[in-house]
Length: 330
Image 1 (cartoon, rainbow, N blue to C red):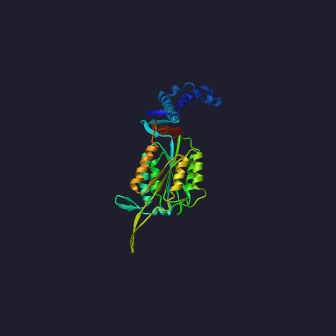
Image 2 (tube, rainbow, N blue to C red):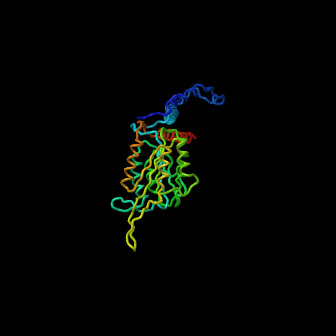
Image 3 (cartoon, helix red, strand yellow):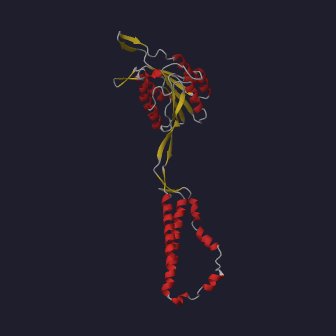
């Protein structure tokens, strides 16, 4: 259906008539002296021709004014109502990109992959399910960076997560700075729920803020933090001297991650393989359900350019016609 954004501008339609009525109609003396009071005596054909030449510009000018008023009323085509989910929750993901995330102790489809690749796959599926949440993405290593501000555009968040790579933020791990950045971005948001999901495979080895101090700051700003420790407990390593078992997660600071979750009212999870990581994100769906209010919006397509184009076209025709008429008169 067609909708006019500023319908009251229709009141401008009779404006030319009003101006014509208000302006004085006195004829200058020079014109009066040259006026022939009985022009019809010089021939009917010439009088009618002059009259017709004066009428068609007036008709075109009237149409041009009509189209100009229609354009100023800003006509729009209103599409069908579209449901938009809004949950009232701001959810930030913080993903570790430090050098230790290159450890290949995860398996996807019978293929050994590094921890970051597994994180991308599972986290992307989680993000795609969060219809109604505003989602942001923090990437951290030696430094913490806001990769994606809070947005309803889940596809963009997934794309930027998948484009991240190891070492992008440095080789070390600044857990405290990542939490501090999330607090900074979320504390001014007027939302019902603020959640941070922090995934790491190590301990805090860089940054200006300690993880526990950042957790206290998060708790003071009502930010709930779910921490995920990622990495296998053991892995078989083959070398020239044979095979041996190693613990690839020996640097994981579970004590600190549990303390962060406890201080902020969240939970700590341990992901030793792809299946566990996937279960954790599904459990997060249950802990932070996507309860949403249904809101609707109707897409609008602007149409003002069409009547505006017709008005300009008619104005051009009138101008060309007046020039030709004056040329013939000369």
